[in-house]
Image (cartoon, rainbow, N blue to C red; front, side, top):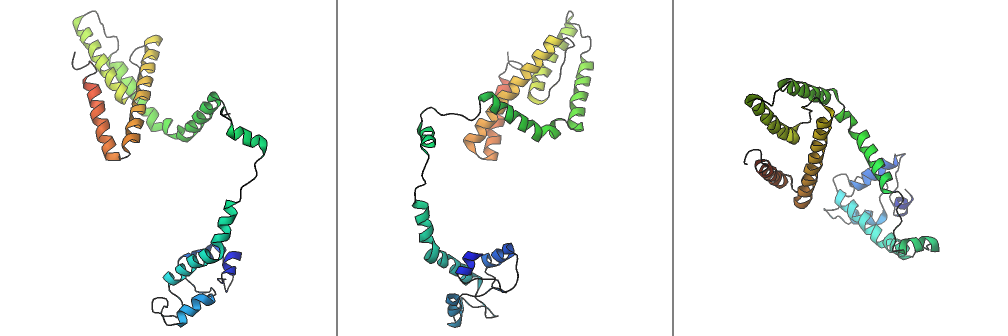
Amino acid sequence: MDYFKFIGCSPLITMNPAEFLLDLANGNMLDISIPSELEDKVHMGNAETETSNGKPSAAAVQEYLAEAYETKVAEAEKKKLMVPIPLDEEVKAKVCSRKRQWGASWLEQYSILFSRGFKERRHDYFSWLRITQVLSTAVILGLLWWQSDANNPKGLQDQYLNVILLFLLVVYFMAGLRLSAVPFFLSILTVFLCIVAAQGLGLAIGASLMDLKRATTLASVTVMTFMLAGGFFVQ
């Protein structure tokens, strides 16, 4: 407010500073004093700088604000920026040191980021819809392969289809297909590693292309190639 008063723009009535700044930015000089330099332009009868109510146009106000900054304060501000800030010798030594000192260890950084991500996405991960989807899918698949016998050809074929379905689950879902603990956790580990690899591939494609349509196309072709050449469809 002191700066605008210095260049001749002051509110004529009590105004909220934010509204005052917005009016100036939009070139609205109602209830705002008109600087003498700008008023002279209006009195000269320039049609481009005058409106129907005798006030300067928005373009003229904005041009005046830019000129006032350049002529009255720009040089002084630039000189302030050029003045070096004195640094403490200890701080200077740390900045110039080749061995960078991190404020937190790798484990602390990982813990903080993991906690932040969990807090941000916990409503998505633990929503009733997501939990219902995972549990219902696991129950249905568990019932389909309940007590399947791998000793006869029919049961062996079912087990083979089970492997194919597990491959599809790695791409889309997460579910345990066995009752014993070791195969279940190995399956979870496999799914987790596949998810990490898929996310890494997605980040790499997105960072290299930076275009949604192109990245989606390349990702679809790449994933489809991996799926077809993974050994489940072509031996």
